Length: 80
Image 1 (cartoon, rainbow, N blue to C red):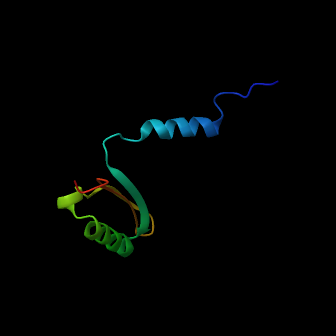
Image 2: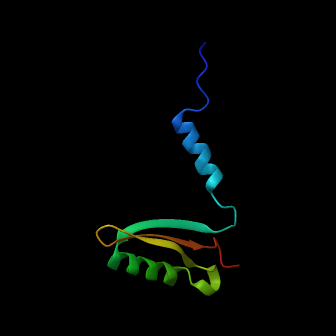
């Protein structure tokens, strides 16, 4: 029986992704959209999960080529 190498790229990527997730209780969603659609998506997100109840916010964003925006929205899982 031949043992499989432990550090296959697929396994390494999975372990690193698991390690990089914050454990702060927030749910995060990342989007990559054209600027007008990004603005509409963020507005809809904040209307669906209001900041006062879910502590929702745009956690990070950046401009990509061709007027595309990558952004991450975060919120608490429930409004307790």
